[in-house]
Image 1 (cartoon, rainbow, N blue to C red):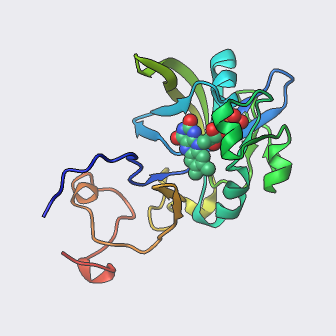
Image 2 (image 1 turned 30 degrees about the vertical axis):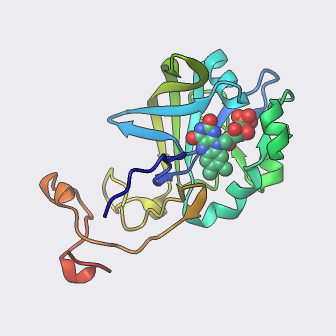
Length: 217
Ligand SMILES: Cc1cc2nc3c(=O)[nH]c(=O)nc-3n(C[C@H](O)[C@H](O)[C@H](O)COP(=O)(O)O)c2cc1C
């Protein structure tokens, strides 16, 4: 039976992205986010207007989207209640956030220069996407606190560990994204059922027959 529920949150499960962006003093800020979706060489990010990441991205037009694997959960969690912005909103202060200008150090992450843009990449993330901002607008015109920011991928850096050997593809069985689901972290590299879409697109490295999967339907 389905019930009508006044759901307060719609975080059904999305990969965690560590966004690096350039601070006004030239250092790199890094912050976790997960309201992101992808199409072709483009992504749309849902970000709070007040975050340092948003301010940096709109000022410089640049960001690196570093995709976090499940084994980075401890590092990501250490960033959870930090902001690179010295001015915190009363809500953030009440929630326990604090200003931290040295986020790489505090999270135990390693910066590495990008090729085409100013902000550093996160070495530990197997997929790092150098991006340009193409446009932005408020998600809710009546409440400008959250923005949809469109970015275009300029260059992708992919660790061999998640590359399908000899191809320009990510191996979906090797790539184990850290998933944020209703504010909790999940990383489940278990294959479930073969995807009809992957079969239709003739994607390389897709799951085999249903017997090789944890579940069948
Ligand atoms: C796993 C995770 C996912 C998050 N997803 C988002 C998100 O999608 N959009 C957003 O605006 N903030 C998100 N946040 C909160 C930001 O990380 C937080 O506002 C942070 O202070 C931003 O840092 P900054 O001010 O240095 O940019 C998320 C936090 C965590 C830990």
